[in-house]
Image (cartoon, helix red, strand yellow):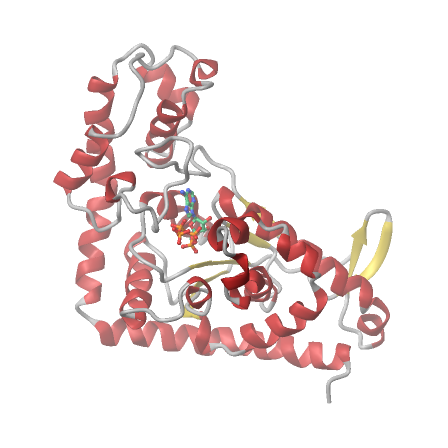
Length: 353
Ligand code: AQP
């Protein structure tokens, strides 16, 4: 049976300072995947409009995320780096997917419930349809793998549901047009146009938690800056935030099971493991039995060692806006070629003249 060509896609919203969660959950994986796959990395500026329409400095935020990609080690020549709104096929495909997806699917999304809060009637229609646009971002490149943090798992499942429904609804047309890849759905072989994309979530820190509350995700929109480490924080700020990070009075446990019910301890161990490309088991083997007063300075030093070169390179790149804009323009052009081909195929499959 023929298979979809492997391709990695992922995106980050230009909605504020990037933090350690975005870095460990997403960007660090983007960098590693360049060795094994063709990758498309996108600053998803249209997504930034869903929760808040007017932004003080959207161009600056978009350039800042681009600089973070490049400073972390993404190669924009070997791969593709661009901002979403440059390739209008994302929005065009999102419309088709709005007609594929069901309202009930969208209503179940926990991110929508969290972000819309109690006043759902007043949330933008874009916030409800956010997962359709995300599915379009991925499937306009027929991407097979998406590195994301654990918080995006549900949206990736919905992307698969959309792809599957489209493939089944149009199975005959896809075959008639000769545009399908034979795909197994359960035990049935159908002609699919879209792959069922796999999320890549694994690793020791798939969901980095707030430094102030180990049960809440580290997030750009948390009102407390002490809750997160920003990629642009200096060494002193990083040390202060880790020193003040909430912990419990017990020392680090001697085995992994001992982290159960200790969310703050588990979070710091996971962060250390991810930053050192190690595992939680290895961290516990090395530091088990030690007090946080001993562990925290070692963690701070590691965080500074990893993040300081990224933030200084980001600052250097942001002084050269012309270069950043050229990267985005070039990436947009190359992404556009793939996206235009997909939309041409889809018009034929759907019957849009
Ligand atoms: N805490 C986290 N741990 C691990 N991964 C995370 N990601 C976000 N937070 C964590 C991953 O980062 C990528 C980019 O995220 P995004 O900016 O596009 O959207 P987000 O998930 O809405 O980010 P924030 O920081 O949580 O923003 P707000 O506060 O606006 O909600 C994604 O792969 C995401 O999984």
